[in-house]
Length: 467
Image (tube, rainbow, N blue to C red; front, side):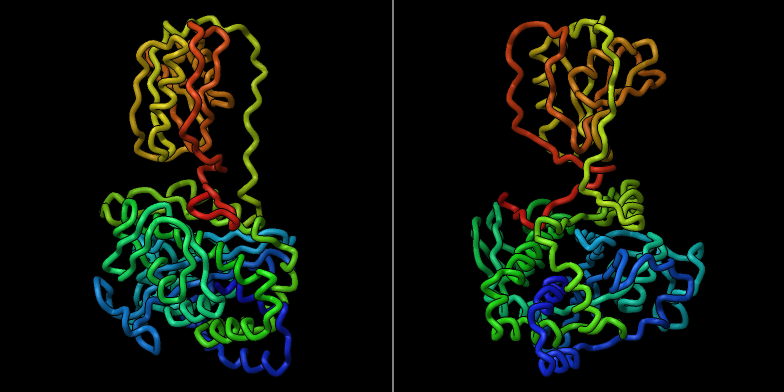
């Protein structure tokens, strides 16, 4: 919502209104919580990469927020929605990184009953659920936790509550969404039929809060709905029909500023500077990413950041575009295949997280003469295709690799007669092997997995959940 607010600000520059809107914003001094051991900034509002942390507060006090205190809500404020907005140094793209609220991460410990202490050395930090940090030390504690775990400097932050969220949606005249399944969530007090709808503020809040009644009930599923919703907001807020209506713009900007909390240096002036620098960015240059996670061993209801998260943070630190596919390995081996498919035992492991991918691969192998290949679900997530084999089965592995263009061959001890195919994100459909048996055509693929970089999946802002 804040990113759309900045774009709208660019086209609405009346001096008197500017001063009034700037006075609406609540300023927060977070110096007592962020500590002194912070990363080195790589840019600012004028030039270079820029990182802005956007947080949604679930505070139940204040006009428009009181009616949401039922269910399993815990007292205090939490930030269930956390998005790191990274604006590239060339101002040609924006990456929005969603941080799951149930992530267990090292965090600054409490000190003297005054919330988390950002000056305590990181080696003394304790593992804590992500959204507890806001309750312990507000935006400052969240920022210190993020910076300490990623070495990414946060230039600015903004916090919006329930009331402000609803007000911005209503000021836009509603926001269109598409849900592929019907939603009936008593806890969020929200129902919605499958299909396309335009939601008002109250409905939109229910939509982005819905979790346990849809899909697997996880926070990761809710993040996908939130990302799709923010994509629609960006398109609505930059639509020419809105930009040509000063009255609607004023309502939108007024609703935004009246509910915002920001750092002391992040006023409308810096926001306007940023908006001017990114005015050429279309929604097709905005991409959403969720921090890769895996199961947290000590609690099935929590997650921890997966190894691929390190690659994501490295890309943000170095201002790299993670949507660009990694170069595929080049294979210059043109030696004829020497092992027939019917002489190879193949095991396919699905490490992609996409249901049905391994079963589809089995059919593609069977019609080419591979005898009774088997499949299983992996325990983690990987990228591309890796083919494991005993050192003495390298020729067999080459035949299998011919069915998976771009696969990486990996010798592994004690594999026996098997050749194991590990399918990760971006795994291609089975291709025709030069020495295949039979002439039955390969089945047409019905299951696909989005190509990724280092296990990091991205989605563009011009996509919705029904695309």
